[in-house]
Image (cartoon, rainbow, N blue to C red; front, side, top):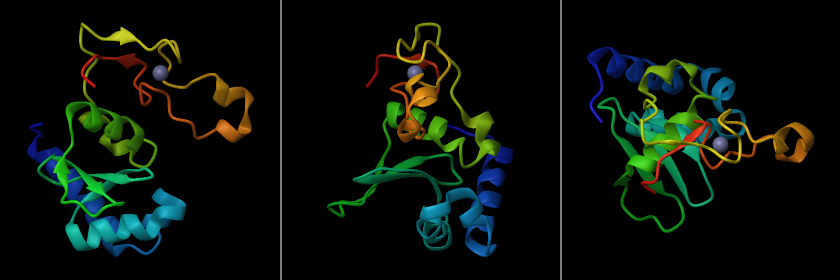
Amino acid sequence: MPITPAQSRLIEFLVAALASEVSEPERRWQGASDIARQYASDRRQLLLTRDWTADVVLDSAGDTWVIDTETGQAPRTATAAERREALFRALYHYPELLSLLPSRPATAGTCSVCEGTGVPEIRFVKPSFRSLVCQCAGAGWIVQDK
Ligand SMILES: [Zn+2]
């Protein structure tokens, strides 16, 4: 997805801060701070999401990559759905990335789980589900391209 030069500079700034500032990875990533710092310093990439078998990272060209952390396969370009999910989820760590979020397409449907809020109600009532991510990844809408 094409990004603007200003958005590219923003990503470079965030990467540089993660790579060089002592408290920045901890502030943004808590328990995953070492991994976030490693992507920033070794690959000049911004860690967007961490899951059981893969991480998704963003580079300053605006490309999102899936990094297989289980089998060690070569990084691959994220699909449109993976990119959208990673960007929405990454807002928790980088609210500065708001301008990179995709707009809601006219064909998108409101997410039935969270009813468009982006936050499933089970998070309100079960503390153990506080970090549960909705099927819409926080967008509040769903497109059928997965
Ligand atoms: Zn939802």
